[in-house]
Length: 184
Image (cartoon, rainbow, N blue to C red; front, side):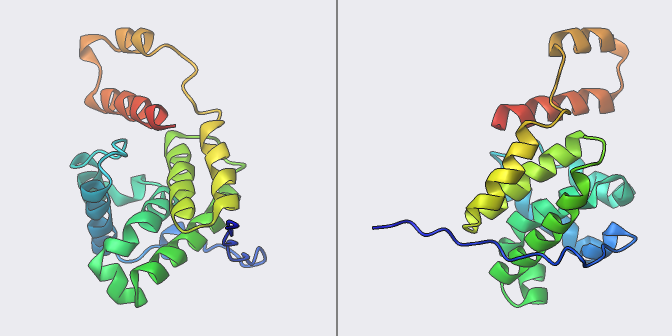
């Protein structure tokens, strides 16, 4: 029995991205519902803090990368009732978010690497792998795992430099980095 690979839909590279990348996302309450669905069902991808990340979205949503959110929604949209209702089905919602995330991914390749972009590439890769888009999934996985944002230093040294007076945000960032690299 021969394996068949489902090709990813062709993207229209001439299509301009919106000036505000947040226009690619559904309303914030639906994004938060999808994030909560993700952390509830995909707890093994623990680099997204279960309570802190949704709280950060509610408090200061513009501080979160739309690329990361689109990649996350590419996975959780299938199981998020508001998104399945909005787009007609979970599969359709997931495909729409994968296409939007991939459109952004093409522009993020040349950006300064960050933890959030690395996580977004990784989540997009997982979403595409689950949908049978194996070739593009491999490409985005390679971007996530070979990103220059991978930790180039010793965690013990960095935490020792933070000392007992480090900010909670610094410790959380350290935990997110370690969690992200543990999965790849």
